[in-house]
Structures are given as C-alpha cells and as structure tokens.
Image 1 (cartoon, rainbow, N blue to C red):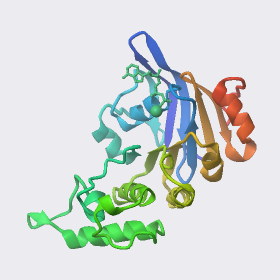
Image 2: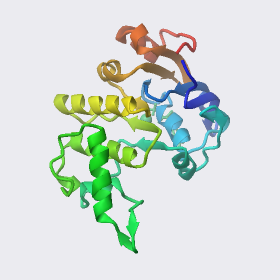
Image 3: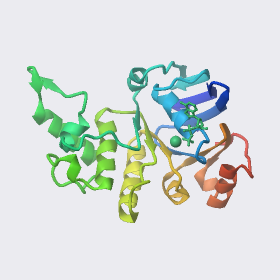
Length: 249
Ligand SMILES: Nc1ncnc2c1ncn2[C@@H]1O[C@H](COP(=O)(O)OP(=O)(O)O)[C@@H](O)[C@H]1O
Ligand SMILES: [Mg+2]
C-alpha cells in the first residue's frame, strides 16, 4: 500500500500513573475507511484527541504524509486538514444548515457575511456527497433528524476541505435506515479521497464500511487488519483480548 497520510509510531499518553496509550502504531490512508474499535476504556478517545491536537501525546512520532509533525493545538491539526466530528456534533440548533457548515469561518464579503457564497459552497459540499435527504439549506438544524444532523456535521468537513476526517460513533444514536444513509455517506467521503477514521462499537457497521480495522485493547494496538481478511468473531476476540495479531495492515 502507498504511504499513509497519517502514521503514528510508538505513541504514548499517561494520566499521572496511568498509562492509557502504551506505544501505539497506527496508520490511515487517503481514500480508505479505517475503523478504530475497542472496549470502553481501551483508549480510543485518547488516541483521537491526540490527533485532533486537543490533548497532545506524551511520546512517539506522528507523521503526516511522511513528515514528522507536532499536533499540540487544534489549530495545528486543522492546518493539516485533520477534522474530528465529535459524538455531540457541536451543531447550533438555532442556526440553519448553511450557518452551521460555516460556523467559525464565515466567508466575508465587504465586512459582512457573504451568505450567497456560503450557500453555494454548502450546496456543493452536500452534492459532492450525493446528499438528497436535505430539503432546504435554510432549515434550522433543530428541525433535522439525527441522520441529517450527522450529514451536516460530515459535510462541514468537506467545506473545510479536510484530508483526514475522524468520526466518533457516527451511527450510535441512529435507527436502521439512517445508519445506512450515514454509512454510505462515509463511504463516499472516502471515495472522494479523504482518509476516514471511524470509531464504532457496532461491528456490523464496521464490516459494512471499513477497509481496515485497528483494535485497541487496554492501551495496546492488538490487531491491524484488512476488513476483507478477518471476520466479526475474530475481531471480537481482539477486542476482548483473547486473540492478538501483529501489526499487519
Ligand atoms: N483526562 C483523563 N484523566 C485521567 N484518566 C483519563 C482521562 N481521559 C481518559 N482517561 C482514562 O484513560 C482510559 C482510556 O479512556 P478513553 O480514551 O476515553 O477510552 P475509550 O474512548 O476507548 O472508551 C480510561 O481508563 C480512562 O479512564
Ligand atoms: Mg471514548
């Protein structure tokens, strides 16, 4: 496989005496969906917060496109095009879809927000993901379904021209039909060339959408496998610590 866009080498993180990440190797590739799985407390969120720059790693190396980088602040992660869609989505209910997609980076035109341009770009982002479930871009986000909210949050990363999009349990609160919609959106996002990292507890979702699977067990990466070369039973074994497999991928 070609060079990963993100590569972690022996990354560590401790909270006081507790070693939460114990020398993690991990990689994510442009155009691929990498699922990050593991039981509660395994260290998934800690791994992601390091990539997002919100909670820097203590040790190890992060390579972006093969070059060592320092992710000590969300600003630095954003500069490399690393975007996280958190579980709470951080959307503003009282604002409409366009306003949410440009939150914090409104396009300025002669001192005021260029609403026309933002609307065009928002529409283009949704179209690039083949989103047809949103009727009006001027709908308030409060009126959207869970799946539509997730769609807006993911499309926001397209507006930001993200290269690496990290999704934290994007289908956790969704029903069957909306889960299918969001997973196909995740696939299209990867097909557009983005490296997608998806955290999920649902192995059915993982096997539906992921190309690669990375398993964390108590702060150790116990398996890195291609989805096509494993199965849910085996992955459950990695998650529960009854099975291990060297860094394959
Ligand atoms: N800020 C923190 N201070 C102390 N311990 C923490 C902190 N954040 C996470 N931990 C601990 O690190 C471990 C991994 O947590 P986390 O990364 O949230 O796991 P996951 O997302 O896989 O459920 C847990 O034991 C958790 O209690
Ligand atoms: Mg977590």
